[in-house]
Amino acid sequence: MNPRVVAGVLGAITLIMGLGGLVTPDRWMAFVGFAPSTESNRVLALCEARAVYGGLFTVLGAFTLWGAIDPAGKRSALLMAGLLWLGLCTGRSIGISIDGNPGVFGWIGLVCEAVFGLGLVWSAVARLPTPANVGVE
Image 1 (cartoon, rainbow, N blue to C red):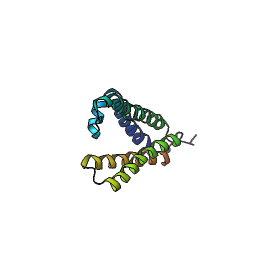
Image 2 (image 1 turned 135 degrees about the horizontal axis):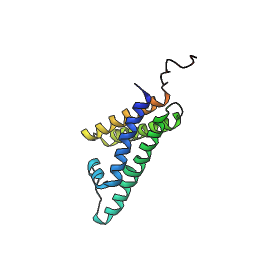
Image 3 (image 1 turned 120 degrees about the vertical axis):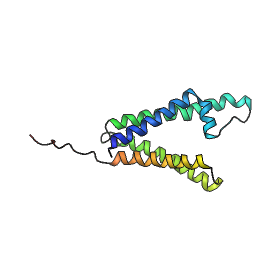
Image 4 (image 1 turned 180 degrees about the vertical axis):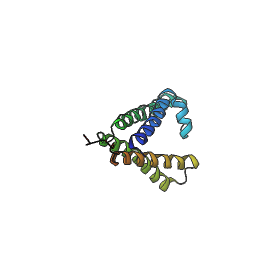
């Protein structure tokens, strides 16, 4: 596997998720099972969904794509992105241990967060293959 490809694919998916959160926060809230507690809190809930699922994930995806251009030169960017995904996975794991079984979509979320996090950490630390003609004159 190529770290550039792994980081690029994961960054693109994250960016698309973030843009979806910015454009249709109500769909993302429904997808993750959130709803405003009262109709008067609807605007607050939409703003929070846009901030987290939209703004945060859009920047995380763009940052990851930026790191995918030169994984060896942008190790810290990819490592940070991977650790953020692993932080989401850890938080979800703690929630599962305290609150119980989250259902199939909660488990899928946990697996996706772990795969994204580990994939990006791997992309940050993996060595790119050296072209055959490097150092040959």
